[in-house]
Image (cartoon, rainbow, N blue to C red; front, side, top):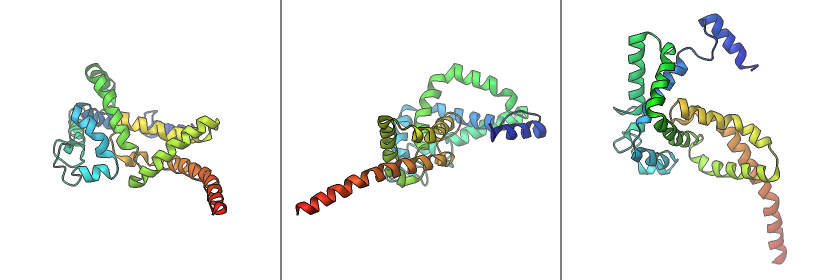
Length: 215
């Protein structure tokens, strides 16, 4: 609140609105609704598509000339373009989206609430690969570190990682699948990986010494 409250007060003074954004959050949410049109094929293919290395080798991420073209930023008919076109249309017709966002959310949830929830899963998967190919190493070690923290009842790592994980879920719910929104995850990933590696080093050195003495 020490960080956020002055920001909200500034918006109230400058914009007449006590909140974090003016139009940006509503615009992003309208664009996010386009992903609710995801097909079952796109849902399942999103997991290999967004996995570093696997997706780069298996899909066309340059021209988008395959079944996952709607996940591309620049391809015609993409989720991004569909959402952006609807956003621009609403602004052109009404001037602002903020006064409409409550009604838009109600209509979307009434019609597509289950699709909205389901689409959030692959979007979160895609967003968690901050760090690119290195995350293939960092993420499993981070998961191992969380399990170790639970097993040893040392909650500090989980407290440290909680904001980043919550932001991952938030961005999947109101944004898109691009990893740049979740760069905050690199910190917890790295700390968790370092903890596992450092915990393993004494054991590795002991096994090396035992092997050397046996020879």
